[in-house]
Length: 431
Image (cartoon, rainbow, N blue to C red):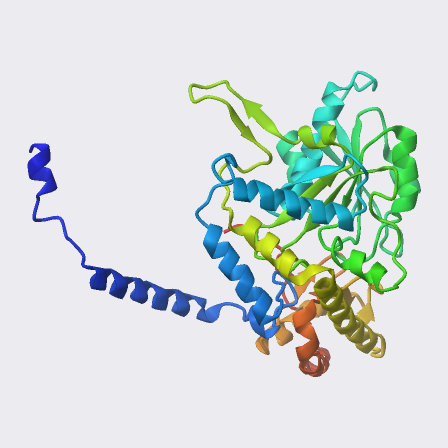
C-alpha cells in the first residue's frame, strides 16, 4: 500500500471534537472513581505523606504546575523560565539557611534525591582528594535515626553505612560518631530534625567534629528547613542547625513538605560551588552530543519548579510564619494531650512539628491503635523500634485536632480492652 492510500484509509477512525471531549469527560470520571478509596488529605485526615495549605494557595500551586507540566528541565536553554524560577527558589532557601557568600544549590525531586546526591558529592570529592590515606571501602558515619534514603545512597554507590546508636534522648551520639570515623570516611550526617522522634541532633558538636577531621557534614533538614527557620524568627529557642555552623557543608530542604508546594520539589544547597559541581553529571561519550544533568533525573517536568516558585512568592515570609505557627500550635496540643494520659508515652518533646508516641509497655499494640484510628479515617505512620505511631502535624490539622484527640482517646480505650496487636505497616511500599 502506498503512502497516499494509507493517508486516506477509511478504516482509521476520525473522532470529532465533541467525541474527543466526551471521551475526556469519561476518563475524568474514571479518575474521580479511582480516587474514592484514597486518603482524604484535604480534610486533614492524613498525619503523613501530604501537606495541605489553604485553598487559595493550593489553587495557585495547581495552576502553576499545570501551566508548566509539559516543559522539560532537562535543557533550560529551551525553557529559560525554569532556570530563573529555580535560581530564585534556591536563593530563597539559601536565605532561610543562612548561606554564606558563594553558596549555591539545585532543586531536586525531594528528600530522597537530595540525600543521594549529597552522598554522591561527598564520594566524588573524596575520590578526587589526595590528602586522605583511604585504603578500603568508603563509609559515611550517621546516627541510626538518619533517613532511610541514605541507605539507598549507600547501596547505589557502594558506600558503607556506618550507623551509630542514638542517645537515650534519641539524638545523635556525637562522641560515638567521632569514634567511628576513619581514613575511609567520606561524610558525616545529622538531622534537623530527625524524622522518627522529631528532635534535632547536636549539630554544633557534630560541626566541631567535622572540622577537626576535615570531613563534609550534611544536615538533613527536609522536615525542618522551613519550620525551624520561622520558629526561630517567631522567638522560639531553636538549636543552631544551618550554615551558621562552620562545619556544615550541605543542607537538604523539602519544599513539598512544610513549604506546602506540589510534590516533587526539594532543594539541596551547598556551602560552595565546588561541592555542588560534584553532584552533577556531564558526558559526551555517545553519538548524541553533550549531555548534562544536575541530579539523578534527566527529563523532569517544570511543574514542581513552577509550583514551588509560585507558592513561595505568594506566601512570602509572613505566610510561612503564619503556617508554621499554626502547625506548631496543633503539634503542641497533641503533645500536651498525650503527656496528660498514663495510657500513652511520648517518645520525645518535638523540636518542630513531628510527634512520636507509643504505649508505656512499648508493645506492638500501638499498631492496633493505628488500626483503630484508620477505622475512623485517620492515617498515622507506624514505625519501630520501638513500636510507635508518628504524626507529621501541619497547618491543616489545627481545625481537626479536637476531633482527632477524641477519636484517639476512644481508640486507646478500645485497644487496651481488646489487647490485640496490629501490623507494623510500612513507611514506603514497593509497588
